[in-house]
Amino acid sequence: MKLLDLTLREGEQRPGVEYTVDEKVTAARELDELGADFLQIGFPVAGERTRRVCERLDIDADITGLARAIPSDVEAALDAGVDVVDLFAPTSDQQLDAVLGASRASMVESVREAANIARKGGADVQFTAMDGFRTDPAHLDDLFGAVDADWYTVADTVGSRTPAGVEQFLTGLDTDLGDVGVHFHKDLGVGTANALAAGRAGARKVDVSIGGIGERAGNTPTEEFVAAAAVGEEPIDLAADEASLLPVARRVLDALGEDVEPTKPLIGEAVFSHESGLHTAAMLEEPSTFEPFDPARFGGERRLLFGASTGTGAARKLIERAGREPTDARVEALLSNLADLEEEVGVDAAVEMAENID
Image 1: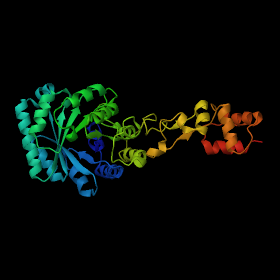
Image 2: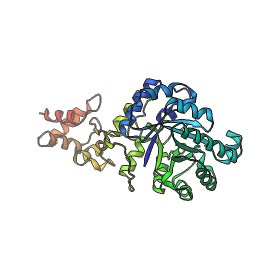
Image 3: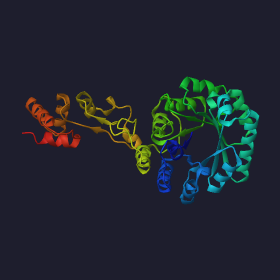
Image 4: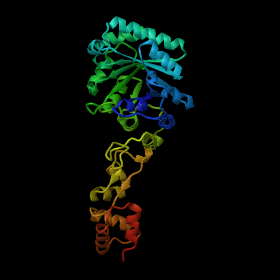
C-alpha cells in the first residue's frame, strides 16, 4: 500500500498555522527517509513556497502539489516543479451545489481538462473526489472512468465514516481498487481504523500525516497506520522503514514546531513509560506483559520508572538485578529510599540504589 504524506499541506490548513520553506524542506527530507511514496508539499497557487521547497529537494518520494480542477491551479503546480498534480473537486450532491455551484457534467469536464493540462505539462496525475464517501458510487465509477489519472482517491472530507461503512462503500465500486486511494479525517476518532479497513477492502494508497495533524480533528496519523499495519491481525505491506518511524515522526514535528500531547499514541512521552508497581514488577521479568509490541521495533524506547508507588515485587527484582539476595530488610530499605525520591528514576538508577543498600 502506498503512503501519501499530507503533513506539510494539511498542517497548514489549520487556522493560524504556516510553515517556512526551511521547515518544510527539513521535514520533507525526514519523511523521505521514512519511505513515504508521495509528499504533498502544499497548494502551489497559494504562493511561491511550494516552488521554493521543490527547488531545494532531491528526494526519492514523488512531490505532489494540490490543485483545484481549473487551469490556473494546474499551471501553478507545474510551474512549481511538482512531480504529481493532485487534482481535487467536490463530487457529492451536497458539495457540488454548495461548494462548486455547478452541474455534475461540468465538474467532470473540468476535471478531465485539468488532468489533460497536467499530463501535457509532464506531470503525473492524481485525482481526489472531495466528499467522495458521500457520493453515489455509480457517479464515482463514471467520473474515475472519464478522467485520465494514475490514482483516484476517495475522501471522507467531513470525517463521518466508520470502518464497516468504508469497506462496504469501497467494495461496492466497480473501479479497480488497485488504482484507488483513501483520505480520512478523524472527526469521529477512527481515522486509523478507517484506513486499515480500506486496505482490507483492497485500496492501495492512503493519505496520512505525522501526528495526525490536519484541519479540524486531523487526518490518519502516519505513525499509527504504519505500526498498526505491521502488528495487526491482517498485516499490510508498506515501504516505510519501521525502525525509523518514531524518531522520524518526532523530528518532523520538532522541525515544524508542533507540540505533542504526552499520551499521544506511539509518539507521546508517556506512551512507553510504566510506573505502576504491578506493571514494573511484571515487565522487569517479561516486557510483553503490559506492552502490545516492543517499541524498539519502531525506534521507540520503553521507560520503567521507580519511586513512591513501587511495590515489593518490583523491589525484589531490582535487588536481584543488583546481584543481591532480596531479603525482607533489603526490600523494605529500597522501598523507603524510593519513596524519598523527588521524582521517579529509571531501571539503571534503581538498580544502583539496590546495590548500595546496607
